[in-house]
Image (cartoon, rainbow, N blue to C red; front, top):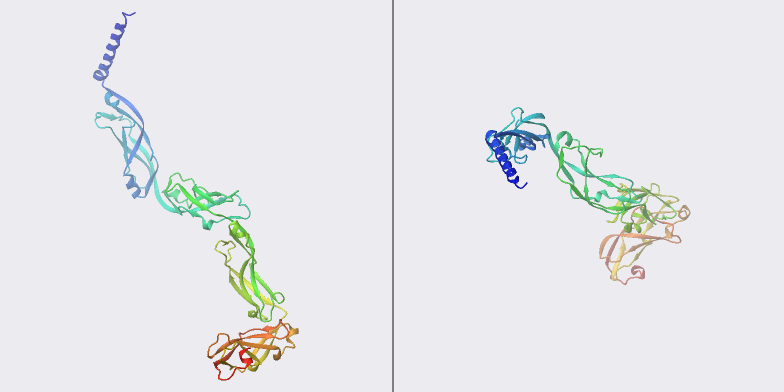
Length: 421
């Protein structure tokens, strides 16, 4: 057995030598297939300049059959063979058969393509378009009662998304929608969210040939508590009218919805609009005013109404006009060493109150007073105030009643009436 081993080894060496001789000398030419070679497109920029883009064939790969010396073919692989196709011929939308060229690494020559096969790749071009679309929150699910998602205060890292690609697909996109499930959502929503390209009906669109400039968007969405509270107007007794007896106040709307933190809403039971002195309300026509609804900075008005209409009417009242002379006007708080004279000789004053009180009312029942507190020497007007003896259900009504007075140095001893002592 040992004597046969050298013979076998020698036979193997001779066979290998004969094989090498055949493949390199007797038959040096061979052919070989190479698959999965990516196509490199030239002049892609000029394609975009013409308002076009590829929607098929852009990621094409080809297989080539090459002929040449076996030694050269053995040095080639699918990764070092370069296949290029020029896009200059693509000038308008449509399908094109583009001839490609094959190149090899440096030092490899005398290699050729199979001439029986046309070296081409099929591509399809369409119109290119781009635009910015708004980022919108798209809600689904039921919101827990008593809570509201404050969309007005939502903060987004991007207000728009840039979309680009095939025009027929870009035209379908009207928004980048972030889907928010309101079910069980009770706390502020903060995080990075993916978005979906949608149409005007907030429906996802299938746009495989559209690209965007951003992946995720950071969102901070406050969740607030909501509460319905009544609107209130303070009515101040005046002009013989009492709020609890004679006044009827109507507010439209009667209530509004407000939102804020749970803590901020705890102490809010009503919203005060303004105060109205009933002395300014007409006896027969009443009063109608529009009042701005103002809220503290930590609350928001969710009703959509910014003004309330306030209507005040009076009932059970009548008026009576009396003429007062200057002798019936009492002067008080006249500065020491000064003389006060009332130049107005008589004044018509209208009083208002229940009929039972006005029927017997006379000028003698009225005490008119002019106050000189802080007054300086000179001639000017001062307001009158009135007290009705024996009743608090009658008051002066209508105009603001003033008298003309003159204040000067007094060279005589002041009387008790003039000093108010």
